[in-house]
Amino acid sequence: MATLQTIRNRGGLLVSIVIGLALIAFIVGDALNSGSRIFNSQRNQIGEIAGEGVSIIDFQNRVSKNEEMIKAMNNVSSLNEEQQTMLRGKHLAANDHGTIDAKRI
Image (cartoon, rainbow, N blue to C red; front, side):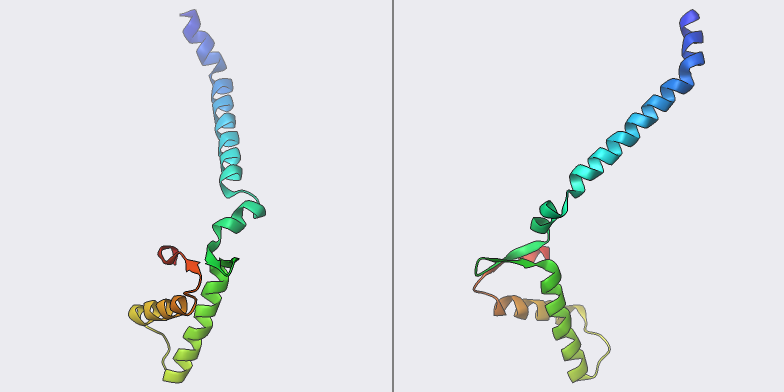
């Protein structure tokens, strides 16, 4: 009986400690997964061309520019999924002297 009373009296402290540890674990886990800018630069690369890394952001910007040009030439407001896939494929084929991971695109 005395043990139950002790747990009831100190239950708030126990719950606070558990919640605090969970918050610390969450923050540390997030910091380790997201990494710093140095570690993220490798994650943002989709391949390598002539020894230089190709950023997925740069690739998407180039594809977007080509997409805008095609939309303007054909006087349409958007391209369908098949046309977008074909455009990405043509852009990858233009860079075939390098290796790009097409699965991530």
